[in-house]
Length: 584
Ligand code: FES
Ligand code: MG
Image (cartoon, rainbow, N blue to C red; front, side, top):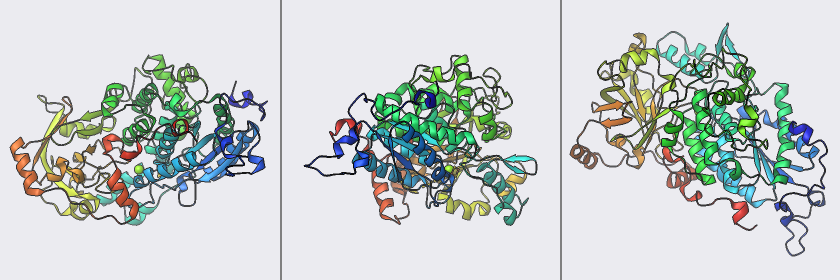
């Protein structure tokens, strides 16, 4: 039965599995916390709706409408909905970075979930950082929770050509640099309600929420404006009331097994390089050990089977009609490639039971497992004297890149070259066209772009070569301690940890130093001896970054962990399962 059918007789008299948490707030003559009579009937769960949509957050704005359907579902199931705002995080609008606010939104939601009489919560997710922020908070407080995505926007077109949000920006920037379009043409763009419609970070993170088991099966990919999206909002409202009655908590769902399933799905869809950062963070808050070695171990060998931009051709509308994540999971199940089919989900069933047999009917978009777009599509985890941890998304390595850098018959998976070093995106934009030492084979280094250096870590590692080289079709490898937009198709080496600002080697590099990358050995090294490195560190000193502009930037810089560690607030990790352990 669907959640809608199984809830049709819901009433407020149903006995929950454990006493409702919210009742401790009400009708206590010694502690008149709240005495609103309509909120306090026995056995009527109070459900928060964590609203991330607002005028400042247009990707999630449609949630303002969808929340009404969530409310209807909650009421129909016998609960009481209480909607409240979350700190806005708009990927494209927030300066210096939207990811600076992920931990701020997390912190404030922890306080709301912990401090108010909520028995469960619906997490309204969508734009890149909103999804991890809300899942991290639900993990920390550990009250029953269910995520619901706002949904991707509809297809965009330029003439008859499909253009994906986000991705179109990278393409147009290259065209602008090569003089093929004007600035006015560059600024002309298309947008609908919903989040980005490529497999950027938004689509990836919502697929991850579903793969983890935290969203209803098939829900993540429903386009924002489809009628189905409203029905999904209603079903989500119904289901959260049941989750409260059954006392199913995030820690029951987000187990190590669930994270391994998510990693497998991330490889299969060609997911964003931001996924390891955010999933490692969610894992930390729910008390699961997860690191970038797990990402390579579970994900690297799996094939890319989703033909959607940036790794493929289509957009999320086709992805949804081709079956969405359940069809991806079904394909993995069919080939025994989903690590843990028995992992529980918010539907009340396992992910295997949810998806078995849901194979795609549209093989243009979801291709067969044994005839994939890329055979090994997960992330490589690189280590060496350049950094302890860096990620490379191999599914987007282009033919041109392979020919230019990975075609030496004696050494086909390695390349080396002199570096050109940039101190943050402003320095790069200022100097890229005025640097005669940059030629074919130069490795571009972006530093000062990590969580501390450019607070929140900027999405700037995918750097475009000088216009002269672009015209000749030359790509340059990029390495950096920042992040990269999930909508970018660049095979950069990114998320380098430790970052320059906390003493990472990138901070001590000079133009012309040689760097060697070996994808077979998974190494990233600067070709200096240990003595030369020590000498260089003494000579150059710790990397200096610009001073903080706001109080939060300063607090953030003093509290944040490296990208490889999930960029979490270090002191927050010890606060786990608050609803169970703090005796409210
Ligand atoms: Fe918000 Fe892409 S910018 S989803
Ligand atoms: Mg982004």
